[in-house]
Length: 508
Ligand code: GAP
Image (cartoon, rainbow, N blue to C red; front, side, top):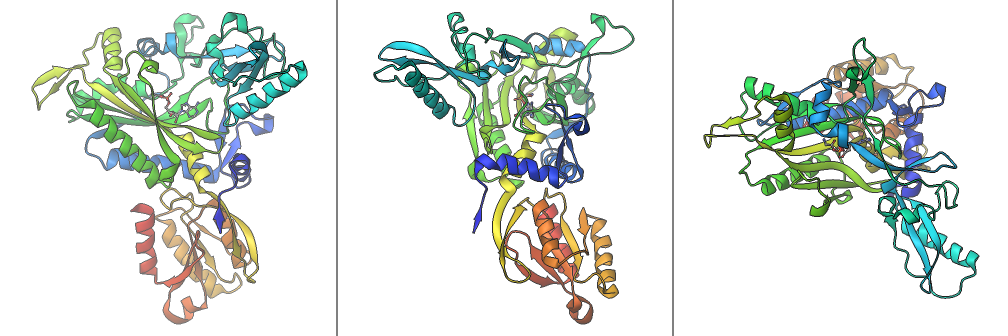
């Protein structure tokens, strides 16, 4: 029987496994860690690279209408003025004056507690899947404490940005549980600043990019002028982005340094953008499924029109069932011509393109699918983490932990084992196969311990295939045993069959 660990403990299990097996470590751990920053260890960097390579291959190399780009992290500061980030890229925050803790105001929820028409106090809760339940329990406790008889009105949670000035003093701080210490919501700038050049004054201020997208807009003209692109076409970029998040949390889900995979897909202003948007949403869903995410774990969150930025025509977020709840994984936005128009205005350079098909000249509109590498990696880990029970070498059923990664993105593609390490003929044959496979894929050689334990070690890091060289290999027909991680089924295959199978599973 196979089951995913309960979602409550799942994040803890994943964090523990990532540390134990060298996927992800807290940054600067020997100095106590650094909130919002993570390092990727030997297996993590393989997984991360495989995700990026799969995206690049499918979105750039296997398409005729998308070009790649790698722009700098620090760009001319005027780019961020033109894009609106200098003035507008901020999150509302609220401070607790007593505990000195800071919260994102849109993640802090509150409600008045009303009994028989009288407000007897307020409850507050930090955003979480169980927030309604937690708030209702707090309200019931408040009613008991106030010894108030009568019916409790339904608890209607609102986020702190919707609070009225007269409520700031009444809403309890989540840190202390008492009212009176929360400030009014204030805008908190998310861009990291740095200085470029020898001057230390404001003229030297530059920014670490908070998204890769503006590097694409800033290079749009270069690519139009030097490439052979014709509308519709896209420019794709993978790269680091930095945001001084107020509340980095949920492991690598929201961090301060992360990586994005973004496409700006340029279309005619007269195009049927709704159909193209839908096509992009479907392409993105198909890609997530192709790297092993379950289709049923992905839903669409269509932003209501009244919540869209003024320049945006539509945005749909692909949501994924993460261990901490259903959250945004991939944003797919129709941004009109806002960005190119802004850069045309601020740089004085024309952003028009000549459309050969219609003989028109215009500034194109854009559809922007924007995905986080780290968030994808967390989604992949959450979907892959499995606990089940299988028989060991002696036939006794034992628990095992495995990561059911798709072979396409698994950090180690196969492990090669000689059945016994003290038989030179087995070791030699296994080493030869290992060296051969290593030329094409990241494979692992392991000769130590009982074969069952070697399988288990590979199951835990998600290696899809185990290949064992035994006496039949050298004495009979040269076939090897190929074991499947998920089913534990074994079959004998020739070397040619093995390579053809791995090619299909890993590169297909
Ligand atoms: N250019 C559009 C843009 O950057 P966004 O919704 O702010 O849009 C796009 O970010 C994607 O980047 C998100 O859907 C998420 O996958 C990832 N992302 C954003 N902020 C992140 C953070 N602090 N940590 C990890 N990933 C993040």
